[in-house]
Image 1: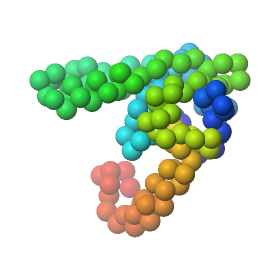
Image 2: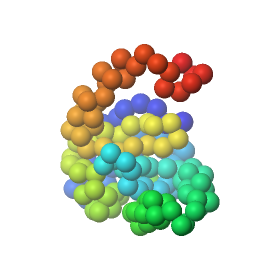
Image 3: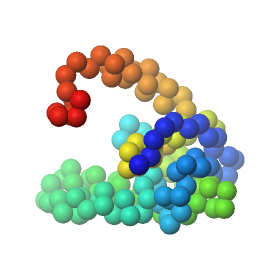
Length: 143
């Protein structure tokens, strides 16, 4: 499980240092791809396979399934962290997520999300109050 918010910097070569506490689960490799809300998703290879299983079993007759699968798999890049725990974020993914020097790397349960630092702050500014104000169960039986 990935938790917390970290603020690494993207270097001039497009490399991003993963938080030390995330590295053990990603040593065997990872997949980085486009995510929703103009962030990037990072999965351990085994988790990516689990995540995409339902997509693999979805009906290809549904245009949304085809569109989602095409964008997801076409954007996906298999990476292996180097000895310093850095991964290279492909240029096309950096453009998609608007990544600049300052990034936010957040734990999102079974995946990691990589955001441009300013975009993450803007997202929080727009959603934290709504999160605090939720008066009903979002996940029935959990809260």
